[in-house]
Length: 365
Image 1 (cartoon, rainbow, N blue to C red):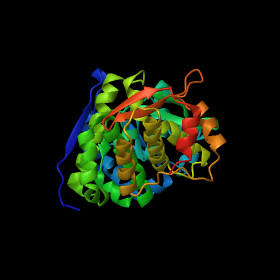
Image 2 (image 1 turned 90 degrees about the vertical axis):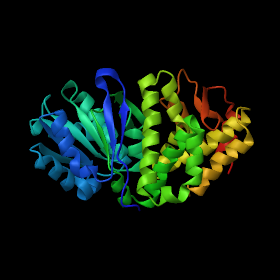
Image 3 (image 1 turned 90 degrees about the horizontal axis):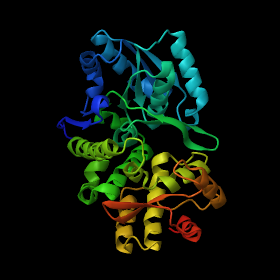
Image 4 (image 1 turned 135 degrees about the vertical axis):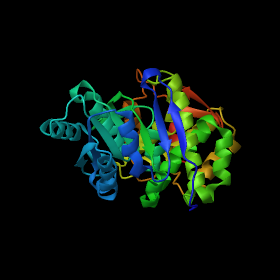
């Protein structure tokens, strides 16, 4: 890695609910300084899974204590299996027992599961208390920590219970990525590639040209990549905060990806399921006459170049995948909507997809 990287800051412009996204190596040790200046809450509960709490909990608590901010650490078991209403109830009870009230706040320290759980809890505890995001995985840094989507899973589907609730600030420490298992890094890179496909062909080209530096987590390159993803998402959220129209393009690869993830019993991690979903969506766009086969091949080749799986495992039950498609939160009145590329950098939302084409892309490689 390079020793230095230029700090970056992206703003999400939502009027009086606007907030900054700070992207800086080592910022984990300086979160307290900024929170002290911003005066968001009297004290904080840092919510984290047990694994991330062991890695970074003491550092964050020390950062807060250094400036006189009182904070306590609340943990839950690691993994998607904890992203449910029972975890929310247990954490809410813990907050109540500790005397947290409307003057207090939450800090989400961890990956996408932690951010979703903490944001949802903040939105409903005492009918809403402030929270901030400190994402430690690439997927959370480029996607789930920004935009205010919160939620938990129920047996019938992923993220079916949730709210839109914006954080007050996001602090992205790129140095945290060094502790990520390789599969988790790849999962985050799938979301990175998504942004190029949906909105920015030049960024897609940058990912093609700088693959080695991205994978090596070169500080300057990875900071630039994260900042561009956050910029794209911020602009989309500013135009369509509650997913009434444009924001739905952020679901590229997610319709099939979520179904694949659920059908695997969440053994396939989110980002890698999305990689499979993006490849399938690109092939679906070709079959629907929306996308040139060469462009679809370019999407597939980039996913493969980064080491991501693109074929839906043959052992996954196709009927189960189809069943999850019907309960996806993007399905309306029984119509399944897909985000399909028309070119790299431009996508279309459509439900004009034949079942036989879905079957074909699920079984193609």
